[in-house]
Length: 478
Image 1 (cartoon, rainbow, N blue to C red):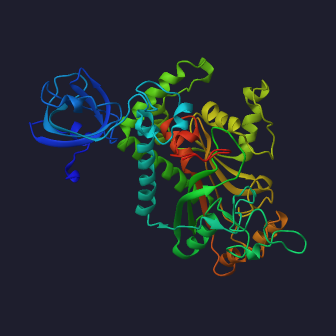
Image 2 (image 1 turned 90 degrees about the vertical axis):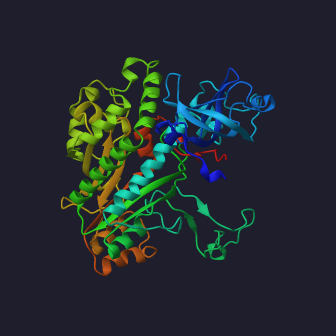
Image 3 (image 1 turned 135 degrees about the vertical axis):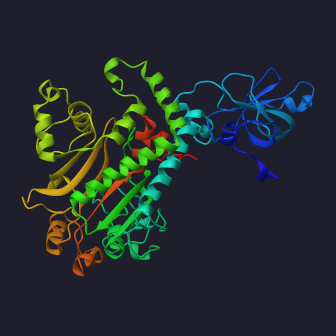
């Protein structure tokens, strides 16, 4: 009976009294033909299994190689060794799956993250990725718990869509048409009426527009699903497939939006600190070791644990975009030409500018509001000055922007005017405009890239290391 097994994490917290237990896992190490280090993925800590000499078949012992899977039944006793409270004295030992130790790609030694990306199907078995993905799970659960406890409705918005919410145009096309000979119109363009959906369709870049439809019926909804960007960007911060959390709230303005986003970030990070402290401490130690090889000016000013506690324990600074630009223009970094990118009113702030505001100037997370309308999307509410929109971005230490949101434009005439200015097809989005025609309300929402959040909480430096199987330009392995 396999369901009688006890997880190693639970066993390590159990008081030993000679009780019989069954445990299963993968061999991390086997020394002196007597001591098995066993791990089942529930924790980075291994359970020591002691095989008394002469009690097991030698043929079985020879098969106890790295990553072989085993089932052990034995007595839980107090450990005589250092570093663990309990160990199991094996009575029966069964090999569930053999592993060729010499061929196994991830040998018991230190490997680079680049190498492990090539072995993404096995990297979960390392301590680093065990911690990362347990934290990812906890954060996902905390997100659902946060919104559920507040009475939000979880809305599954479509993955296949005919609209481009961001207006960026960097979308993956979905089609069943033959690529070598698609049907064509008289002018030579592809005739999408012949396609599966009868029109041109793509993978979604955002569930926001459909989310707004839900919010104008249920009051408050959130989405949490995969989104896709066909952006040919091979950086440590970009993925072609990633997950987004997008709440939308009726009867809310920009102030309400900022308050919810700040409360949300505090909540999920605090939840991870409470439920995955051991994993975060392990990653904090790993990061500190990694940074020892960096020059002083490239090292983080705070350790990972310190940074997370800092975010949880601080109210976020709130400034306007105009104030942010003034601060940057007055900064020693600008005056000494330390910034790589231009600083002036009207430009989109780069990561270096955002991190300066957070890490050097305010030394705490910052919410920047009221951006120039020309660098923001068509659906953001136009402010009375006619130049800015009621947008907000939350900037975090070490990463820059982590949340982007806005009060939505609820006035039909203003929204249509804005769409026309930005060449967004009004007719195609008639369904979206109906929410403004029939009982429009002030409403707001934001988007949080889930992998950015996981990156922040784990202290990893490459976004490909916080999603199971990264999809990036020229890479769709596994």
